[in-house]
Length: 289
Image (cartoon, rainbow, N blue to C red; front, side):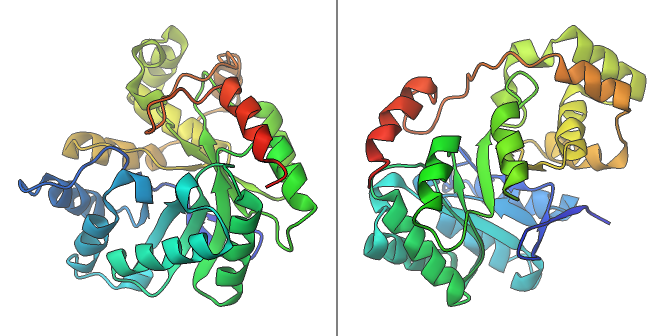
């Protein structure tokens, strides 16, 4: 049985999903083969976004799987250029059309960009209409939630943010727990950063469990009740990642990993700029959007 995290509205979200960031569709069929391998390995939660350029290919691969649509949990995101009341509704409908589905299991605002409050109102409407099961955000900081609280009827159910053992998001995480906002990790393996995978503590824990460092990191996320969406194009890695569900970490292991937090981001977002505190400062310009 694959683990689920229950959202504040009662919806069960598969805790271990599959991210498709940077996996590009092409004439060689590699994208379809990757999704097929993920489905065969047991993944049913797939995370995409408009900016990734693969919504249509993902929808087609899921439709071709022969597995009923309702057995999948599909997430996409509205890009910053689609933020606004009417604009976000149009972006959502366009995504559904591309993915050949009448609803999405989860839909997120990708950033707290211009007009994110109006965009959130659009998500509230789509949620009330039953077109989205879970509405949420990505890359939001505490100040964005605090501002949204003064305008929203429903608070975001989930926040997808960069999280890995070197950047554990502890203060934001504590805030989200208090407000029943689920924590979802993007870049959960640090986007393959060598310093993370070569960390001696993580390597020692992996050796004790006869697992890979990647499996230990994913298990750490799972033990923390974080939803996690690793990505890979390698059939071996795809299978290895889902095998993180086959063991657990001790409290002592978790304490050792907790000490690895540096508080520093290092993931790069698809726009090409670094997602760092400078972005957070710039985004405050839009707090009155």
